[in-house]
Length: 262
Image 1: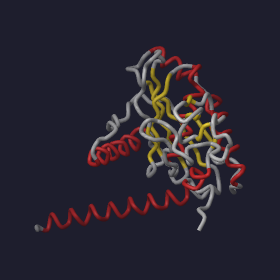
Image 2: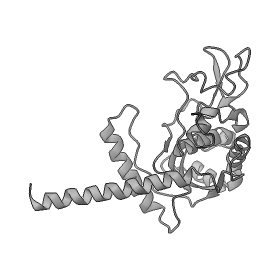
Image 3: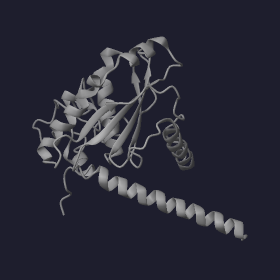
Image 4: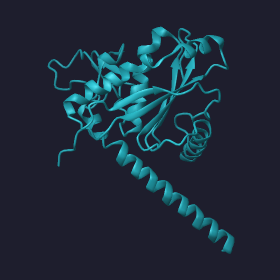
């Protein structure tokens, strides 16, 4: 092995150590809940600069996302956090550059790692500032024209980066549904996992808002990491707003709102 290769390997190892240390420190601070997490919403036109989408995102204000803060505050009350307001949403500027396209479901591990590296660089390049990212979540919302029957690309919340990429519809009628997706992916960034199966049905008991309800069906609310309300063993419906969602005990444990029983 040449000296050049040895030096290159040592440099890469040093970078990995620094990144790992930063990620660990970020995880500990962001999940301590001693003070609110700053959540910055960046709006992006996801439809090739569509005038309809531009008009919608330019008229958005922080009030549209207030239900997310309210949901987090109300759900945290029973877990008695140090901070009474877990999140504080603020508006970032409108971005004109698209993030790198995320890999399709089922893509290989190498593709996911490569996308993650590109996304980190894109985030650094397009949202540069001097603020610390230890307690800040960056949420990039790509808005698309609302067309009946249209399906959107899967949204992503990155556990190790405090960042999320949301695909949403540019429609006032979809604001509440968009907020469910934002809250769901936001919780992914602080450690929450999905609670549904491959067919989108809620996993029992962790994916049920009230798994001890008798009779079990119909449930009246959705666990936020599912987003759907089980009406029967096979039937379900989407929650209409965050008012129909809860943070269940398993999710609370994952995000350090509730300590695991020993």
